[in-house]
Image 1 (tube, rainbow, N blue to C red):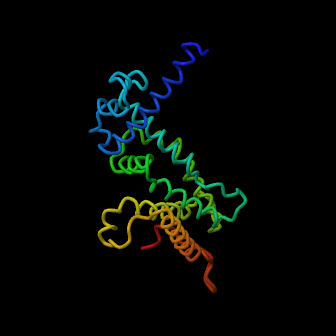
Image 2: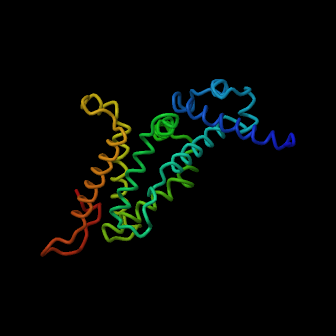
Image 3: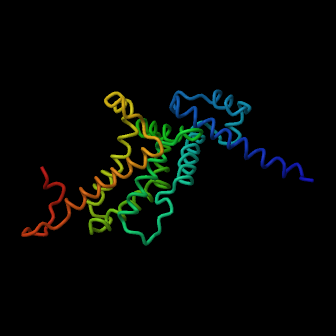
Length: 232
């Protein structure tokens, strides 16, 4: 027979998880400022004092929700989706793009993850600082490493950084601009599983073509590269 303590710990962990899930939905719908602790506890089926007990305050709860959502998304769709470390960089780039799209276009119970992160990009809070350092910076470094291999430049080269940002910007465009895209092209609905695969293929091919054209030595021309500030 389990002791009272052994029974209490799983119940406490489950209440915490339910609060994180409920808070994620509420924050995604209303934003941090308009979300209320009362509504979060109502959806979680928890006492109004539960947030204070488990997290201390609304700000801490929100920061934990961001970490929870991002961690769950990466757990389901890791950046390279199991592609081997020794795989060609082009293959790694395609995996990186696909995993990014799968995370932001997730449907079902986890759909609030992408919506919450979109809100945080538009209305950043103090919680974004720690999330960037803990989760996003390592992923950005991983992408720069991949791009650097493709274009034959060091990962810390400014041109590599710009290329990496261009890759990511294509991914987020299709998510953040969905209201406009759906109106411009009503016959092309939001991507399903197959559509996401096709979109990942397009973004990867487009990015590879651009990168290889931009930084490929041209016959009869100097190998010297122009810095971004030289381009007008």
